[in-house]
Length: 517
Image: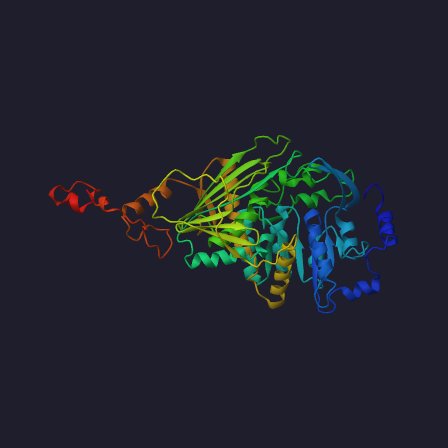
């Protein structure tokens, strides 16, 4: 605790005019005035935004109240300086159990509501919903246990760490009829749903390809900007609970490994495979979730993952350059690219036969396309192409997206409506796509998705051979198993001279003058 005892920390908190409530007022808040009681499990850096949002909402009658916090670390508060683009800036660090309890007005001495064991939180009747912002390897276990305990769930992305966990969470939420939101904050933007509606109405014709990316550049290394402190040690951290090597969802499959204490593993766990999936699952999930929603897709048919660890040689496991190519049975493709060593972006678009939807601030542009034009040299974007702007009338302001996602979640909880903006069903599909990318990257194999068994399998030549067979049908509706129902076959309009194609038929060939010469 910043070089001081927990006792002195609590004393300083009270003396400093903290939000900590007295015993009488504390008792009144819990479950009072029709407020939904929210518990926070894993109160690190990302969760501080959630704490601030609920604090603000709690000022309104009949809204919400923060009733419990849980973390494996006592926590630390303090100021630090850092360089940002050559400019020194001063920042405040406040994370962990006791600082977070203080932030939301809980008594740090209350062992029931301020605890390192999330199971105590789930036993509390005043907890209506939990916010899970732990490392990824704990997401599924806590989500399932919360649903079993009768709680609704707001879980940070990615929803889980493995594909099997994703479907275990979906099954549990459906069986227990719990409301769940996966914390992909961009899903608060109506642009994705509006674009999907336009696509379903045929605005851009057959969707051929989606493209999205996440580019960053940091000299200190991706996720190494999460600070390490001497106050992070085996005395202040329940290391066994953090690892979860004695916990499981599936028999014989521990949540995490049994490894020695390491501050970097604790604070920068995204750099290591046992706890997360690097860019694939931390950053790609954002983009994949909202783009498959816009495209009207869910599970891929085939996935290839590529990339490598090319520059950030600092002891990490995960790559600094990565790409996923996902092909879908609906007859289209999604390309997701990223690097953590260059920040120059690519456009986020959905390409169709009759046009392209390009996502921009506040909505999207529709750039018309004409397949009747002749093929030519590929265009270079010497200047950005602008199309017809569609205003999504998005209420999003800076950092407001998470607030709106919370508001949608809470409204759904009150109505008993599982159809949040970011459902676990959508979360499972997005996560499966990026997790298959991880597996492909790490094994060097292309993967198929087995929808019946809900598992990936090593790919073979059947993807290409099915498409080739389809082409040989010469525009007839495809009868190849696995293609979407209602498929209309070819949309190519051939020139007259294509009548000359095909096996030689002797005198039955059409005359040149009727076949385009």
